[in-house]
Image 1 (tube, rainbow, N blue to C red):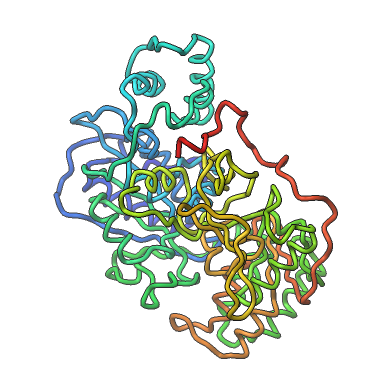
Image 2: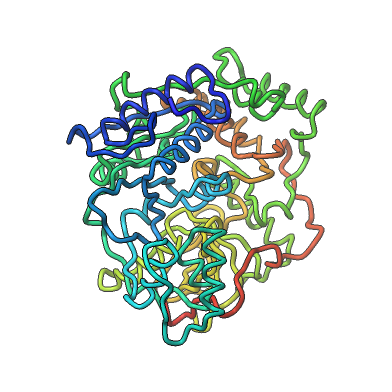
Length: 508
């Protein structure tokens, strides 16, 4: 085995060997870092599952590094080089931009499933720059681009290995070099899918069409997709195709958040005993806080996680009131959640443009201000590699009960948004934040109802998903109160590109 520098646990090593065997059948020998023709035309699907702290992400990262060292081309979704007869390809995917950004922050070049299903079509002139950056061509001479601009593109690519980011650094907009998007026609070789508990059956079938060798990474303790029949796609695989990892205590020693997450596996544990465990953890470690109120400042970038929609709506209105937001407009810095794109079929290209830039259902964005046309918004897409976008928007602020939502402003058609200061735990799956606020009274209600979800008490699945969204600190909010903000809403904290990189409204 081509052993990584870090040592594996026994079950990680066993999973590595099983995956290496499947990759060998696909024509990639990790032992000797060799590429060869596939040994079989048969498709292969494997799943690596485990709860938080079991080392799934570490295993994925090490497999990626080994494949890259063997010469496999990593397909990012932003540009693909010339097809070569002997090349082998790998794409690392996640269901959402936020989930993909979690991997990218750990050095793994992940992209969204949508960016692999639909590929960009480049203007031939600017494709010469992409080929040069990827080492497949000579430095080009492009009319209108100076040597200084090309140097900026080169420097950007060395840091980000992203063609669009490099072209943006040269002063180009997306509409300058991407002429459209098309559904992928030719399959790739190997696909890794993180957060596969979020996949629905249709996405799974689409992925199997693209990737003869597919490896799913998922957490069986999370919540299944809302529109599923109650299970996760890896649960449909034969038992010998599912590799299970256990918690690696030596890597997460002393992590109170993971301790709480794994305590939920105890079938005798009830909600009130669990909440006492949270209090005990908070008393000895500041990574866990028994909070008496929701912090409005945190909600601007890290939504409060709730179970019930009624709670979500109440918290959103409390958040807007705390920041003195006007009832008929949005303040720059307010968080939104994309709820889909409402465009007729004849505007399919515009839909693909928006989705490819990150505006897919569930995407988290920050409102930057009004666009240049009525109904357009300037937005920052959280987790996207090129986050700034301008789009026709329909923003809905929901009201309690059966009242119709009020709409601060709206284009006739475009991307639809709900407010994002609070989100349901279901919608938070796949995302992580430095600090997470969990609204505990909602989980207590779920425990009283006695509902089950895929064979487990619903409250335990809700609590597990919610607390494992926290990277550094978990705030377990026990009262229905909101703390007033200490500073005004703003956008200075966002890594927003300079003006020349902004997409104009008419470009979308």
